[in-house]
Structure formats: structure tokens, C-alpha cells
Image (cartoon, rainbow, N blue to C red):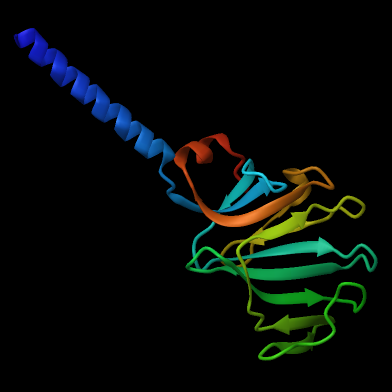
Length: 178
């Protein structure tokens, strides 16, 4: 009888440990900017980021060959708000004016459209193929920057979302860092 009680206690403890491990490994815990391959649920890479933090996507305009900077902030509801766009040349694909509460300025040789309030649940992004100089910038003072080619092939495309990832995804994924 005592042996049966010890066995039952062992089984219960083992079950508690297994359930705890599963919970720890698969409970979403870390907010991240997640790069999903194309429109799948396959995580190609992620950047740990918190609500209220800013990041930028910078790409070379394929005709003007000048940088276009798109600035974003992570909202509380894990959507992505575009706050500003900065560019050097008018032309194909570039806005020519501000609308509503937006502010159009010219500073230090660049056009700025500020006070944007475009909110996205996701962003579809292609890493440049012909002119592949796309970058991701983040950090408290926008002091961290990587070229997307460091992590992705030229021409590859991704769906970017702010999501909580699990410890398992954190360990097996490709973490973006300087």
C-alpha cells in the first residue's frame, strides 16, 4: 500500500513538472517585431520590442537611389503606427503633401511628413532585390541598425507583426541584434 502511495505521489509530481514545463515553453511572454516568411506562420526572425518603443524601416528608392525612412511606434494593442516618413526626392511612390493633422516640412535637405497616424495590424515588406540596402533601426535613440541582408535574402518578402512569442519560439528563432 505504501508503495502504491509513493508511486501515485511520484506520478502526480511528474505530471505537475511536465505541465509546468509545457506552460513555460509555450506560453507567449515576449513582445517582438516578428518577421513571418511571406504570408505563413513561419517565423524567419524577430526583434524583441515593447509597447511604446519606436523602430524605423529604411529603404533605398530604386529610382532616386536615396534613403526613404519610415518611422513607427508599437501601440498598446500590438498594432503598428506609422508616425513619420522622411525622403529626399519627389517622384514615383513618394507623397507630395500632408493631409489632415499631418505636417509637411523641409529640414536639412529632406522632406518630412510628421504626425502620421496610419495604423497597421501588419506590414508587408520585401527586402530589396535590385537595390538591396534596406535597413531596420531601433533603440532608445535609434542607435541600433542592421541591414536586412544580414538576415534575409535579397528579394525575400515578409509579413511584420507585433506579437508575443513563446520561450520555445525565442530559443529556436533568429533573434535580430546589432
